[in-house]
Length: 211
Image 1 (spheres, rainbow, N blue to C red):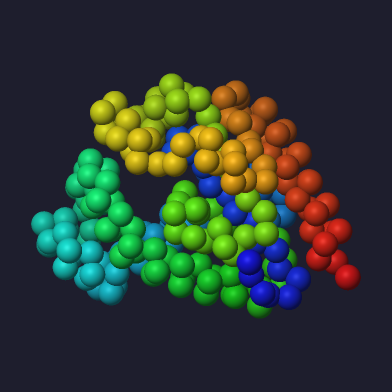
Image 2 (cartoon, rainbow, N blue to C red; image 1 turned 180 degrees about the horizontal axis):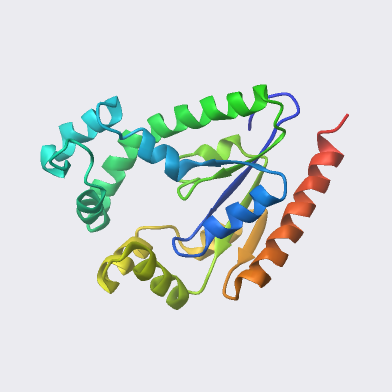
């Protein structure tokens, strides 16, 4: 839970390929300041950053491109096929991501932002759910997610399945979330469902944070 006066942080997470990016965008359209943990994860592993140096210590410099930047596709192949390696990678990067998230939250608070959406694919695994007052999870049927991942990332069915299997089960999200958004339909339906959740969260904020 955060301790910033008048600031409410809402966590957004869910299954890969469920359409979380669309949901995040809809929240932004409805007055929420969005922190994208995936974007932050790319920043902390930029060339010359301590996080990238630490990753190289454990995985070797062969996971770098010729220009010294991280070869994300190669690293993905390495970790998504081996759970222990994925856990090792996460143990390295999570502290850096968390520190950057906290810094961004403080900056937004200083700017007077009150409703902050933390869009984090690994919200629970990284324990950043501890910062959140409410949690939303986006889920979708397995077949739909599989097709979306293959199209989005340009990867094989086998690689897409490995990524899906590396994540938490749908039941976990349902048990540990305040709101579940099911995204099996078109974008119009998703907008309507998401806006309804956004309005409920605004009501919650007004009832619990406005003095």
